[in-house]
Image 1 (cartoon, rainbow, N blue to C red):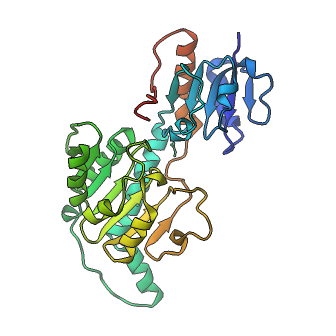
Image 2: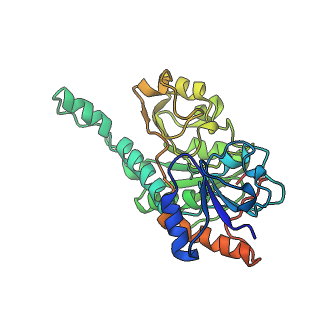
Image 3: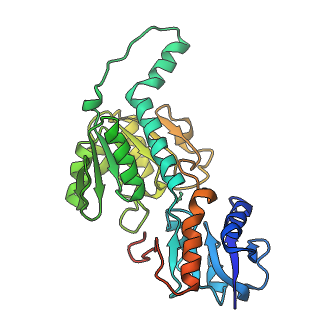
Length: 311
Ligand code: GLV
């Protein structure tokens, strides 16, 4: 019986995953990209940005696990083996980091911290105009696990908080919008817009010139989802015209962000290198272990991915 677990990622050496899995499953035949051995032995692939066609070349593969909560890195390559279930990690640690990231940058904007830093450099004692929390409306694109956690935390801080999702959702204390019409309405009331949508056929290029124009003047944009949602020229134009007051970008159409890209040096843009939420084997492994056990015993899987909807 094939029972090897292949760790398909260039981000880390996978040793923390091996340890976490072995603590629950006992000794495992753990393979890495540089040491795949006989591909016929591989039963499970743990994957982050796998080389195109690689997983389809494992003849006995029975389970594909996305090491990211986003699965576009997997689905983008259309050569996945047909009929093999795909599940993704569901990582409380990652979810907490994501909302923490959004709150940090939103508060930094809300409390004018960058303006005070500039004033300090020129020794100016210059209080900025204060905006009441009750008047700073936060809008969140995407109300999955990450969006809901982020929304609940902003609401707890007292910000009027709304969220948008593809299908209708009802959440306590959060105003919700859905569908194309709801998208425009969400934008029109978002002084701080936070993107946590998955990247799918429907969301690629969603944030174009019309979307940025629909935001209130002076709005701030935080992207901790996928760069593919953003039409970069439209965002730069909205920043340059003064319609947007600034943006924090963790994700980009091209990663690493090329050195010549304007985002690096734009005075209104903060850039971070796709670090808003990092997969942590300690918090992500229990769900993966559960799915490996379920697959081996023929039970229904959890955190499954629907390749048709793209998440
Ligand atoms: C990170 O980008 C993830 O999808 O988990």
